[in-house]
Image (cartoon, rainbow over all chains, first blue to last red; front, side):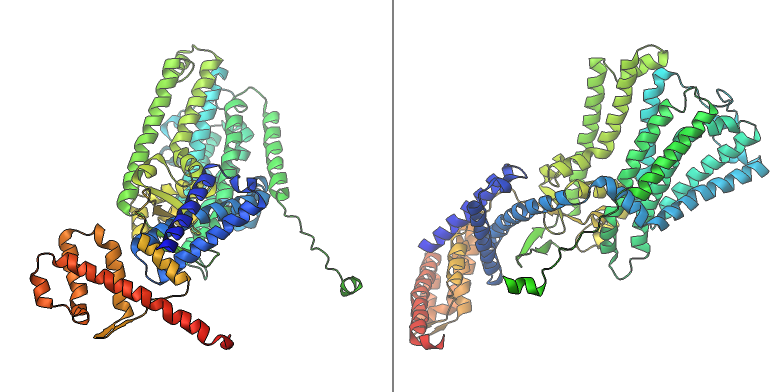
Amino acid sequence: MENAEEKQIQWSRFADRVERLNHQGPRALRKLSGADLANLIDDYQVLIADLARARSMGADHATVGQLNRIAVAGHNLLYGQMRRQATADGSSWFGSFGRAVRRHGWAVALSAMMFFGSALASYVAVLFNPALGYDLLDDSFVEFDPASPENLHNIPSIARPVVSSTIIANNIQVTFLAFGLGLTAGIGTTLLLIFNGIHLGSVAGWMTLHGKERALWGWIMPHGGTELLAICLAGAAGYLLASAIVAPGLLRRSSALKRIGSDALAIELGCMVMLVIAGAIEGFVSPSSIDYLNRIAVLVLSLSLWAVYFFGAGHQKMIQPRVAPTEGAYLKK
Amino acid sequence: MDESVFISTPDNVSLEFELAGPGSRFSAYLLDFLYSVLLMIALFLLMLFTGAAGLRSLIHLFRGEGGWIASWGAALLILLLFAIHWGYYVFFEGLWHGSTPGKRSLGIRVIRQDGLPIGFREAALRNLLRVADMLPPPCYILGGLVAHFDSHGRRLGDMVAGTYVVMEKFARAGRSASGAAWVTRIEKGRSRQALTLPRGTISAHQIGLIEQFLARRHQLTQERRDLLVWQIAEPLLPFLAEDRDRLAKSTECTERCERLLLQILEMAQSNEAKPLAAAKTANPSLF
């Protein structure tokens, strides 16, 4: 039994050591000296070998459970800290958004088609059949009176921070829905995009009928470029998830979902940032008294900045392969 | 849904994780929901009473009073409430390696499919996708059905994030000295061997049974212990020249049987060291 006690002590010593290192935070391993680290890895390998033996020879439940628990802690410490180092060297989040959007252009196109298609359809429908406006519009819009010929709302500047934050919160919530509902095979995302498109299109049609279109476009343009683009991208993130469910290819659906998850998340998080920007413009610039031309300028500027970002950001540099020494170089040495 | 999931590590050993059932997961969810609502109320009250912002400033704002501080304070409050509502789970799971206050009190946590603790990426994915699992809103019917039919009990958010929800064992289970003894012996290349006695042979399997029983006997109830020891020892009694009937009637039957089993184990252990040592010296030329 002497050996057995040694073994038991060895196990619990390793367990204590792992626990202590885990408490020291994510960089604990890098502070160890080379010998300490090698020693730790040796102990880990002894432990997992013991676990494998105990399990395959059918040792009692308590022993296997104890070993398994220590092995999990050791595995998480050793491999977890290694992984953190690996991802730190990887590409930045800034580029991953643009890259994901470029890679999944079809989803962006589909999403934009749903949103702008339904907007255009309802715009035309209301123009040719004004009675539809009473069905499609909120009551508040039917008698809407713009603040000025070039501006729909004239929000007092003191209330603008609140308006802005409310809009940001609301819009981000809409993109969360567009993203998450992609898991309903895209049905939820499509409905959301179409409803929002119809809302936009029918208001636009109604205002045009009543000669207030300049006020409407003047209001929408400064923030609209960023905001509507973000909604389309969120829809695209939803369609990415849907594609894993509808057409998983040779993978299981759960594996296909896992594979597409990173790109979909990168797009969704990018949308959040875009909507914060759009919300700030909508709260502070759109209700201000700048003239129509300046509003167009803001739209053009914001769209061109986004174009620069989406076409330019996150191109992966080609990694130059290290030139292998020629045979002769080896021979000379 | 399976009871546990085995994850193979790069070292070619599989680690076992016990999957969390729907009961503990739902209880943890309810607790977390409660905590997040309490947190929001606390934040609201804090801002209300400090007067810098919050409800009071909203009222001021509608009356056309209050300055810029009130306005920005109210804006901040709205954003903070929104962040708590959507970010509570992401924040805790990302920071606490897959645990939240509710999960912690139920003893469950989220891990990645390779057994490592999750980070903010996985936490964000699985929690933003709650909106789909919750369908129809707050019922969790879609997520519940998917988790029910998945062999690892994953809801949709777990599938996209690549995560499992597992039980975390807090207590260190009692150390089993016999287990360690066994592992030591296997490590040294000695396995159990049959024990040959003058009156018959006790198989290796039976010796294993005796070992396991003796290791566990203190955790058993007295009735169970009496029953098991008799079931194990009875077929062996003739080999040890014991009178079965007399022993069965005696009052200290269990104690006597256990002593016999210990004796067999000792004989087996002293026995098996020899043949192996003999084998090693007998034909060294083979290797």
